Image (tube, rainbow, N blue to C red):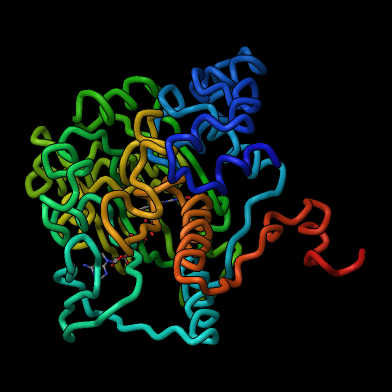
Length: 387
Ligand SMILES: Cc1cc2nc3c(=O)[nH]c(=O)nc-3n(C[C@H](O)[C@H](O)[C@H](O)COP(=O)(O)OP(=O)(O)OC[C@H]3O[C@@H](n4cnc5c(N)ncnc54)[C@H](O)[C@@H]3O)c2cc1C
């Protein structure tokens, strides 16, 4: 775990960071030549066990057969430390972080999209948003990488990430979502349920290679009300249904496909004991890859950003201190270490340290504020408090 942290917590801003003796010593452990499935093959013969231990690659929007073995760290963290639910949902974490930032003096301007980044030469000096011009000493971009670059930064200023080069990059899959408010509780359904397609490999191929919709798609259902009743009115349930699907591609026109795919998604729910779901729907929201793209400004609707193949990772991913421009930094799934919430929070810590170092400002991000020991998590005892 400590050795993996070297990769996940370092910025990889220079080519020589890829050749450091420390990283070289880790190669036999990281085994970058292996996929996640290849890594687990060393321990488990039965492919069903490997699937059960590798589906976490979906958090990065990748198949375990393409995902680099480094990301076995995600499965490890889940099994070693457990899976937690923030009361109020994941949004409660963002709100708590916003309160912490406000306590440190940050201000927020919501519903105020940035429409242009202002440059003096190659240096970012501010942004123009709906509410006006805001000057800056340093600019941290959290918007989707490809969308922000192609819309907000002139092509000539980013030769390594020009529109032409971005168009040739590989992007993750997308998701088709149904958010359902149901009459009655679903006490027999666990908080997390994952259904893997009978033709799992075919489903992955449909998503990543053929770019078509599957007849028997894998899906994930979250029934968080069994843990957190605050998520629905008394006597009702809030379900979140996620089907991994291809990112936006000419093969799938969501304006035509969405109604039939909704029916397929509802039919699939019978496979996890929710055969009566249609008659119980009180409220519903559907989000397709086209919605992620157009309404949420995510390039190709690729919800997990640039794919995580080795040619788009570490030094080769858009860097936290963005290359070629001055005073521009990145956080989020498009920069190092990559997509998925755990590593995105790492990107924020890496970038905070870089901004602090460049501006000569102390940042409240410690060196040893990593994971708590499992025994402390189980006992609910924070680091620094004697056991
Ligand atoms: C349905 C779904 C399920 C997922 N499940 C998991 C999971 O189980 N585990 C996991 O680890 N990861 C999961 N992920 C992935 C994870 O949620 C994403 O990787 C992560 O939220 C991306 O974070 P981000 O900071 O890069 O971007 P975002 O969270 O998208 O934040 C970018 C922000 O920038 C704002 N923005 C965009 N353009 C502008 C602009 N011009 N001006 C101002 N603001 C702008 C957006 O409104 C948005 O608030 C899931 C993703 C989806 C979509």
